Length: 129
Image 1 (cartoon, rainbow, N blue to C red):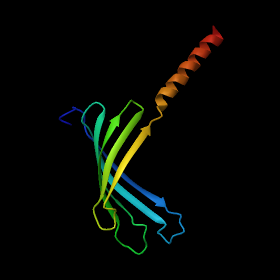
Image 2: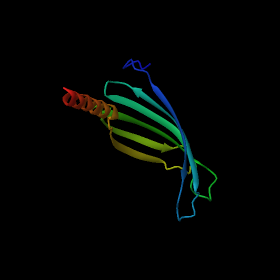
Image 3: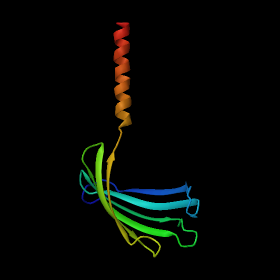
Image 4: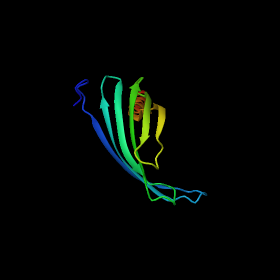
């Protein structure tokens, strides 16, 4: 539970594979794994952190990329977030640091489905009455 917002922190685990189709003599089978945390500190402000490892695409290296990321997400509305962060490498093969920024626009499917159901109910009433 966050002591500022009273909301619980969320933890996420992620793992995946990527088929790297390339012409640069890189590895074709890549994988990644990470653990992330999301901690709401105010109504519209959330702190985020992530630590992860990615398989190195360079066939000459047996060392995988290890990274850490920290950032903030500000919710402009229920459907729009902006975020800023810093990603740092934890070993020599990962980039020393990267500055990140993003914009997320969510499609609120539930609202669209409810709107469509309402329109269908209204149309049915108009047809039968």
